[in-house]
Amino acid sequence: MIQTRGYAAQHATAPLALFGFVRRPPGPRDVQIDILYCGVCHSDLHTARNEWHNTLYPSVPGHEIVGRVIATGDEVTRFKVGDLAGVGCMVDSCRHCGACREGLEQYCETGFTGTYNGPEQGSGANTYGGYSETIVVREDFVLRISHAENLAAVAPLLCAGITTYSPLRHWGAGPGRKVGVVGLGGLGHMAVKIAHAMGAQVVLFTTSPGKAEDARRLGADEVVVSRDADQMAAHAGSFDLILNTVAAPHDLDAFLVLLKRDATMVLVGAPGEPHPSPDVFNLIFRRRRIAGSLIGGIAETQEMLDFCAAHGIVSDIETIAMSQINEAYERMLKGDVKYRFVIDMATLKQEPAQAA
Ligand code: NAP
Ligand code: ZN
Ligand code: ZN
Image (tube, rainbow, N blue to C red; front, side):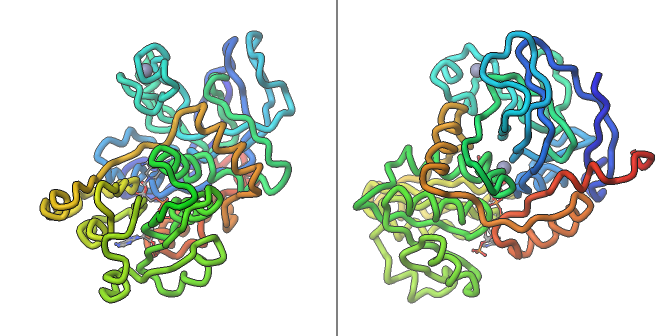
């Protein structure tokens, strides 16, 4: 077994702290990755604090992983030692249901295996994520990284990037389409960049007027402060698509009325408590829709990474040391992130060995 260290929450109200554990040695089809960087997703916080009421403890979060391959099993064909590699939100799935056969592993009919919070296929054991020194993952769930530089800023593409790319592609963001993005956090800022690169007209909705200038720099054509009723009313009935990334319950009607007939608001934000129920008349009268979307499949994640490399897209990040993670969570809760924290995993490797 491989002895490793990570940062774990031991229960819902405990801060994350150093935690020693073992990973399986690479099997014939596994790749072992030395983790260089791991992004900090709001889902990590929801999970560490059991806000979705399904956390297995100890919980080692982290599913925006970029690293270097340090070992491969005998049957691995796509990676060799020294290659860059990425791991996102999934490390396995059943591989034979209808969804898996279509390359939609995130919708695996028996449930995919999360990079953290398991359960592992077969054993049902918990899985431990990227806030750690090294990880062992089946080759099929490892992504190729073609960005040549700025690897820390590539890490957030593995969740924030794919979670926004997938619905933007599915609902046809592109030239001639007016796309709204709600919330300028980790997901929202990637949505702005990607929708802009796809050629859509992008309007960013924010509760933080101070983020307006950044939003325009990131690619928004217009910025609307969502608490300003007059600014909102100016966009009534005009959107083809709205991507809602907000991590807290809020009034969905404020955005539904901005959709055209037959247009869709896709919810990707996943608050621990439900949104107040929207007014059905806002849906009925213009045949509007509310939809949801979960990350993206492995093939589409690769497509997104290649799209971002081709368009020079990375995340805007603030690098932190592993030991600053609890403080980073508090700042994330206040919307005080520009626009994704990324842990430099060298700082974990430098922590004294005896502390594990
Ligand atoms: P984040 O960086 O914290 O960004 C969320 C943004 O939402 C904030 O920056 C803020 O933007 C806005 N916001 C927060 N609280 C708000 C409130 N009470 N009212 C209105 N706006 C508020 O989080 P993230 O990492 O982007 O994740 C966002 C959500 O997506 C989380 O719930 C996460 O679990 C979920 N998620 C879902 C998937 C999926 O597959 N569907 C994948 C990854 C993450 P402004 O300051 O601009 O208003
Ligand atoms: Zn995530
Ligand atoms: Zn499946």
